Picture 1 (cartoon, rainbow, N blue to C red):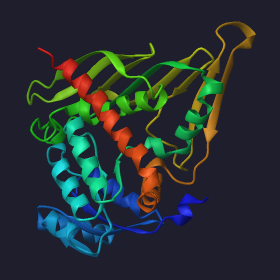
Picture 2 (picture 1 turned 45 degrees about the vertical axis):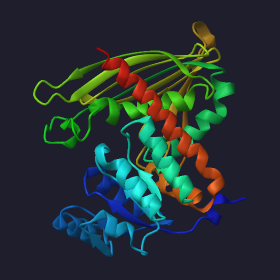
Picture 3 (picture 1 turned 90 degrees about the vertical axis):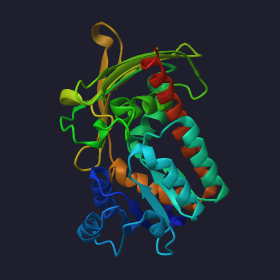
Picture 4 (picture 1 turned 120 degrees about the vertical axis):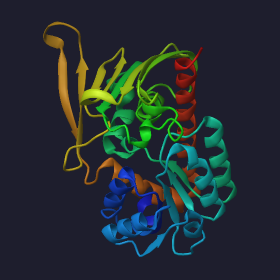
Length: 337
């Protein structure tokens, strides 16, 4: 069965005109199953400029008015975390499919969004890109042969964000700071590559705050799961270089990726497979996985597929919920008095 062939074009309405919304608007232009039809911003000027830049036919200064429009099928919620739940639930109640940026306010918040989407028979997905790329599927499908039973996932996502005017330095809009914004990907990597049946039994984490704003600018931690596996993670806004490292270790071998959130310019992506400890039997292979589209574009393709097929929605919804649960546990550990 060709699931993509069953999917239909979705007419998108964007809530928000910030950096990530601009990036995704450019992506939508490359996806045959997606059309940017409308945009909403509190500032009319921003909505107009965004609509003109990306050829969106409709522009609104009230997101509820956009949700009430019959001219859109799906909504991309690219707003600060503090208002994400309200808009996502309103979109579901208006009968629109929901793609929401992450993180969320809490696991309880995610549950309420999921319930609203189920009730209104619309799709829900978070805006994590790397899980849609063929490299991710190649690793998961080959895990048993390449790694065996994975017992460790180590990940790092760090970059330099020095503009204190960025909303990620605003503790009211983005209370988790770097742990929410970048740490989300650490949590998702652990969820995707360790056993899906394992639950956390031990969580420790630390954070560092910006002296001027009080925003969390970095975090590190460890989680141990019921099957004995662990994930170690680090994230931050205060790195002198971009770091997107991932390591998956098992008794049969090791997988390393130095850009687990990115791809090459042609859409392809690679990983390194290693096996053996000493001597001539050591294997080190660079394995390239071809793709005509990057993960961000494939996210919109996959979204069109689950919008057309309700039976495929639950896995994506649960992935969002379980990622947020891990994030909440790390946040609680890092802020424990």
